[in-house]
Structure formats: C-alpha cells, structure tokens
Length: 594
Image (cartoon, rainbow, N blue to C red; front, side):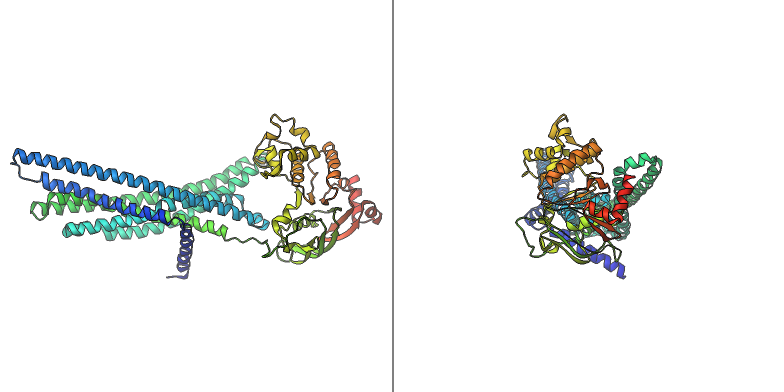
C-alpha cells in the first residue's frame, strides 16, 4: 500500500471516529433501530417461505381430491394469506418506527453539528476571514453538514440492514437447498469485482462534485455581493461566461455520477437476471426429477429477485458514504481551524474600564516581516479625544484593529488601564469598545434590531434615545413603521448617510467606554455631518475617543492629533501646534483647503 493511500485511509478513519462520536447519547435509539432491522429482515426472509409452504401443502397435490380435502386446502390457503398480511403489516409498522427514530436522530445530530460549526466560525480571527471566501463557509455550514444527514439517518442503518439481509438470504438458501444455492451464488465473484471498481469511480466522482459545489457557491456569493459594480462596468456578459463555466463544470460532475450509476445498476440487474435464469433452469430439472419441490423453487426464485437488491444498494451506499466522509472532512477542516487570538487561561476581569490606552514600542505586520507599524509608542488618557491622520497605508486603521485585539502584535505591548490586552477577557475588552466603520453593515431585520443587535437588555427607550442623540430619529420616525420598519440585506433601501446614522446609534446604545471611529463621517453630507458633530461633542464627554479621518475639518477640536507616516509617528500635538510645526500635517491641511 502506497503512502498516499495509507494516509487517505488514516484520514477516513479519523473522520469516521469523529462522526461516530456524535452518536453518543443515542445508544438507546440505535439499539431499538438495529433490533427493528433484525425483525424486518427476518420477516422479509419469512415472506417467501409462507407462500412456498402453501404451494407445497395446498397446491402441489394430486388432481383427484375429495371435497373435504379441497375445503381444507382452501382454509389453509386463507390462513397463509392472513399470515402473509400480518407479516406485511408488521414490516410496515417496524419500518415506520425505524424511519421516524432515524430521521429524528439524524436531524438532531445535524442541528448540533451546524450549531457547532457556526459557533466555531465566530471564534476565528479576522485573518481567517480575510483569506477564506464567504461562499466556501456557507457551503460548509449548509451543504456539507446536510450531506452528513443522510449518513446518520439512512446510510449507517441501511449498510447494517443490507449486510444482514445478504447474510440471511445466503444462510437460508443453503439450508433449504445447497444445489440451488450453489447456482444462485455463481455470479457473486463478477458482481464483487464490479462493486470494487464502482466504489473507486464513485468516490472520485463524489469528491469532484463537492469541490464544484463549493466553487460555484463561492463565485455566487462574491458576485451577488458585487452586482452593482458588475453593472456599473457592464461586465454582465463576462460574469455570465464565468458562471456558465463553473455551472457546466458542476453539471459534468453530476452527469459523471449519473453515468456511473446508469452503467452500474443495469449490470447488477443483468447479473440478477442471469442468476434467476440459471436457478429456474436447474430448479426445473430438479423439480421435474423429484429432487426439489415446486415450493422450494418458488422460494429460490423469490430470493434471487431480492438477493441482488441489497448487494446493489450496498455498493451505492458505500459511494454515498464516501460523499458523506468527503463532506465530513471539509466540515472538520473548518472545526480544525484554530483562532490566532485566544483568551488567556486566567483572564483579568475589570468591573469597568477607565479608558487609558498605551502603545509601548509596538511592531505589527499582517504577514511576515512586512511591518505596518514600526516601534509605535503613545499614550491616550481617559476621556481624551485623539485623532490619527496620514496617507493611505500609514497604519492608522491597523492601530484601531489592534486596540480591539482583532490581531496580535509581534513586538511591544498594548495596555488598557495599565493591563496588557493579552491578559484581558476578549469579550469584555471588545464590549467596552464601540466601533463605527466607514462601511456600515446592516442585518436583515428591522431598525430597532439593527441598533441593539438582538441584545434584549437594551430597551426600546434606550434605542430611541441613542437614535435621537445622533439625529437618526429624524428619518426613522418618517418611515411607515418607524423603529419596526423592515431592513433588507445590507440595508439596501436606506441611503449611505442613513446607514451611517444607524451605525452611530448602534454604537452608542451599547454605552462603550472607548469610542473608535474609522472614517465615520466619510459618507455623510455636510448638513448631516454638522448634526453628528453636535451629537458627538456630547457623547464623547467622559469617553476615550479615537478617530481616523481624511477630512481634517472633522478633527480640529481633538485634544491630540497624531500624524502617521509609513508606520511611524511623525508628528503629535493639537491642530494649532501642528500647523505651527510646518510639517506633514500643515501640508495635508493646506492641500485640503486648496
């Protein structure tokens, strides 16, 4: 066995173990299901025997029979019919109970896995989301977890049932007539070789299909989000062609699966027909020669029709199991991702943050040694309002990301209230920081849910108060349903300014001790900006406020302005002090004035 194949088997075994672990707690359900499978299989085997015995007892007799004997035979046939009906009814109810229990167990496990995957995704760091397409994650949470459902609710039990049925048919046929059993099993070796070959093809086909689905979902997610840009640049035909290429790839992958099954099923059927013809021919000879009864021949004919069915299903289920394992690998690959930012084992919990922020000789790079910040040091006192300015790529937004510990630094220290942020509880740290971004994201829901983000502790009165502070209430109250007005995905029915006002209200509703604003007024018109500036002056009182802005007119009243250039602090002071220095800040200011 090659190293590649050995590694693949080890991986499959690991996935199976992890998938089997989700069955803990369902042992009673599985026991009941397996017992029902045994009962169903036994009854399936017993059905032809009822009719075969009836044929031998009541039909295969001499033609000259008396009236009493004929009446006795008719009663016997009626009893056999009633018994057959009872067996069918029992099988029906056993199948119904088995299906209900399996589906309930399967859906419960898939619900658990889906919750686990989504919760784990939320713990991952920003760097992971920067490098992973959204469509890929959507596929993992939906398609791949759903693919596991069939394994739990169908495949595992069917594999067990079909193995039991094959073994049961083989044992019963050997016990009834070894000669006919020998002729029945003549075609098993070529069928076995066919199954091995089919499994190899189906495994590859399933794997290709799963990859093509992920590829298509990733493409759709990205391009539907950027549809406005596609239409602006009239790239519809190009994007359609790209979509068609991916769609054709998925179509071909599915078609390959269908063709494999389309060839495999008829071959198994041909094998079963040849076995049936062989048994009929040899059985007729034995029956006519008196070596076997007509009832025995019927039992074998019936068994042959059913014997190859579980063999065919078994091969197909192995293929489906391969698909489930492939999906399991992809799901566990997400669960195997570890966040770069982790909570300390014993975090320091603070009752309340004062808001003092210190950067001490901080070096930071997103990748390798390509440092965005180089030996940056500054101190922001509680309640102080500090603005960062500088050219694009100077490191301003990176400083804001580091304060909330969305990334970890390579060298130096970041302290809040004298405590290294690596020693603080991440949730408590981030909940104390209110961030307003330039690109506002709104969730599908309504106005009030987008302000309090489902945090029911924030009352509707607090929601309205926050909206009034930032003058968002002026447009909200004009909406037909006010704070209950539906918000579509990304807030597409609201203007950029309205979305930004909602973002302000959302941040303020959570009453943070530290305010962080990254180009927060970039999408606000001059009139609205004036209203927001008035609100911010009140809201920034008693809160440490950090601002990043290209429009220098919005930060002139900051307590301190820090000028960044190529990842380093070049200038620091108030608006007037920096103008007097006749440096970078003054040139930026004069450039904007001109």
